[in-house]
Image (cartoon, rainbow, N blue to C red; front, side, top):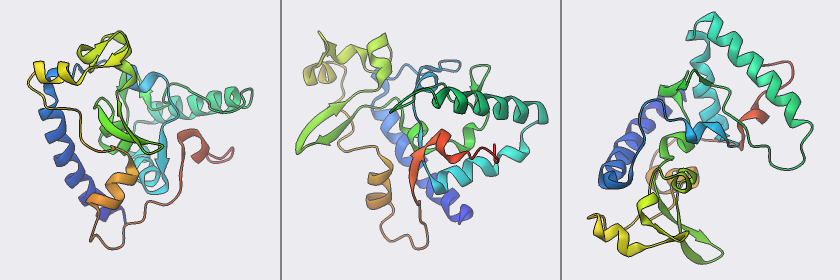
Length: 196
């Protein structure tokens, strides 16, 4: 299953590279920028989690220990919250993703703007970092997205569909047999108290 998933990721990465290339005037991601990894829930499917964690044993023992300790701290902190628990990704160490080649779909798509269906209405979804003067900040006017500003930069519009796992699974995976993503949960919920 993981080999099939790796093949699928090659297709997804080619597609996403094209999207990032088309949206280049608005992309300000660079090495060391971790805005997308500093606060979130990081939803991962079972398959994405298996793929991520299959790389864990290859990490240096010191890095594994840091990640385990961070997960324990986050799980303790989460018990004090009700509802959504937003946190720094436990795999982010010294401003770098320790398992970057194995990152999930949400990580691979972050930074792009896209159209999303919200209760039957098509709205533009910008990355959170746009509010901090980063990706797509050029298209914001008084907190509202201006499609005209896209055109000023030579870009027609955001990516024309959702960038969710659901979209990729149902649209790009058509005809792929045997690949099951399984349940989707926030990252921390995949770690049991005994299994960190």
